[in-house]
Length: 405
Image (spheres, rainbow, N blue to C red):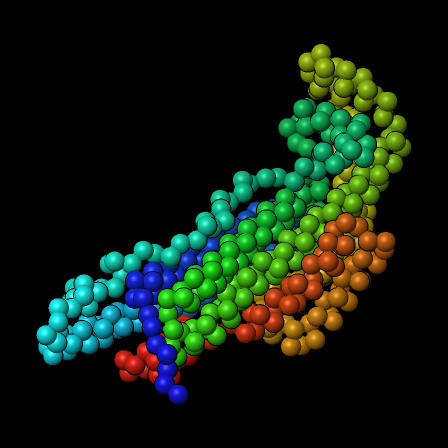
């Protein structure tokens, strides 16, 4: 049966140009990942274990998005080429009709100069998600300490006022690292995932729009090909969601760890023979009286905090399972397809159960959120596996209705 063929070259060229525009946006997402999705500073102590994995994940993600950009751009280019080919064939056919016809041809059949894109309006989207990077932040250790034992934070303030050094901030940064970095990176991946997924949704919308303007074998080939690329793009949203979830979980566990260490500090401070002098010191500070007279107490507390630091190392083990879980999620996100081939889903769930058990069981909001979002991420990995290996091809040897892929 002969193929039913029809095409509006302006619409097809508009789709191609719009697809190239989407590719340009995907390039911006890739640049955003390179700039914002990796470690910057404060990756000390506990966080030093995951610095290299996050650097590797940033590279893997940027490479994946670079490949997506290339496929998207080359597809747009192919669609524009098809529009030009169709237009050229139409012009040659119209010229033959004019040569044998005694009847004036219509304006549509008149010869038209130029590329098909010159008259085509780009297909557009509703607007891509914003990619503004988050401002740099330092983890607020003292704020957490103040919640657990306000007078301990007051003592830290007094030492900082007199010496210019915060024992609490310095101690915890060395022990744990700047966990505000974890929040920043989680938000960066979430934003990148929304951007890539949005590009996929826009591409599918454009592909649906052109259906009423383009028919034939090449069009049918595109109809079957486009959803695979769109779904691979859209899969990035649930995948990046679990990256953010696991980092939110780790931050929550770090904060719990800090509160436990604060209790240790509190106990040690209460054993300090000079503890009652702190109230007097704070009153003196309020009256802007120099702190130098309390140098002995400050020195004793600083020595005590170093002792606490050594004891607190043992408490870090309680967060280690959460760190191991983050490592598994990093492996999953960096290469979703290969990860799941090696029984990765089962292994990741086991890591999650181990981390939750080590955290005391019962399940925090962060654990529940990660459990809720994991199934969609595993489904997204399947869509990533179906990603087309290359750009759309409308045919071979100048025949857009032959061998469409």
